[in-house]
Length: 117
Image 1 (tube, helix red, strand yellow):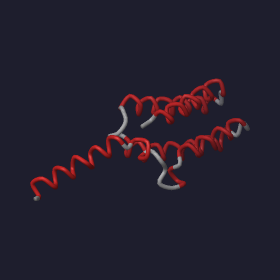
Image 2 (image 1 turned 120 degrees about the vertical axis):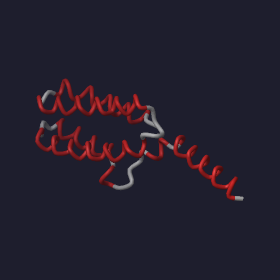
Image 3 (image 1 turned 135 degrees about the horizontal axis):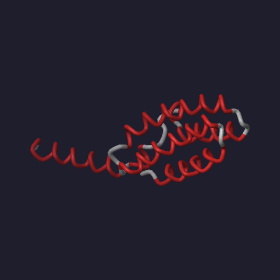
Image 4 (image 1 turned 180 degrees about the horizontal axis):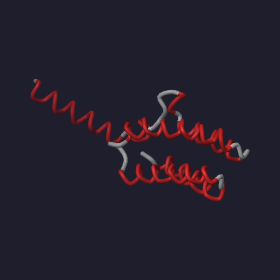
């Protein structure tokens, strides 16, 4: 019985992990709700509150570190790298306090996030 049950169970769990990108990326708590954090950071940038936005970026980055570890097996590596690159560009734009850099990257992040999974 163990000869068939353990491999079958392993294959079912693996298939669920690989196919579950959309529900794996969902937040497990308020601390890891990256979309809410990004939207709040976006509103701070709209108000030109760059220091608060920078602090919120740190929260976004910490959330992404946690989420990226959960979704790394169910999404393509290129998608993860694109999000990392976009976050880096947002950070650079915020250091320059340049909305012409930050806004396109924010909207690109939103699009990447929707397609993730």
